[in-house]
Length: 199
Image 1 (cartoon, rainbow, N blue to C red):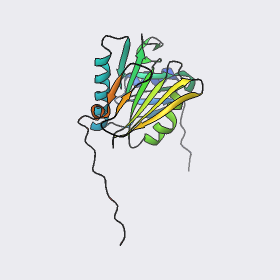
Image 2 (cartoon, rainbow, N blue to C red):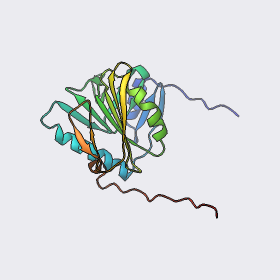
Image 3 (cartoon, rainbow, N blue to C red):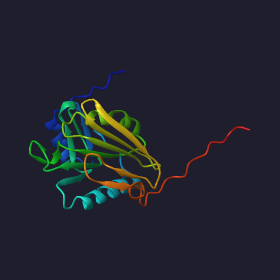
Image 4 (cartoon, helix red, strand yellow):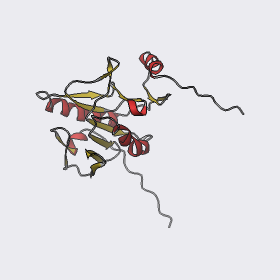
């Protein structure tokens, strides 16, 4: 059997392909990776978060961007589409492209079933290579559960978990607080499947 040959693409080639593609793909060090489709829970959580942020920051110098805006991570040679990004001040664009930014302060990801292991294991370490990046939230869409990671200095930071609907999360990098009940507003969880115990 012949091995499948995969070619490497330049960032410019990827951007040209992405411009006319019917679906979004990520770019990881030369490879183009199609992104998984979203769900109603995924969409609701991202919308709940971005709407609350946008309202909170309407008189402040922070910008909120949602899933259609790309992120460029130069040290890792990655283009990706975080669910929600917060920037301070003006966006820094990749090659003057207004669809691709490079200076998020906070990134919020809604975990997908198919990618949550990868998201938990690797994305924070990738994001932290960005000089502007300070904080990440990973939001589970199958249950009430949020993980918050924050950088406080070189090789320093902290991590917290939230799993109660009446808890509130205060972001450390920007002046914003939101309850888990607001994050999960109108989100419908699938009923848990109980395993039968052999008698």
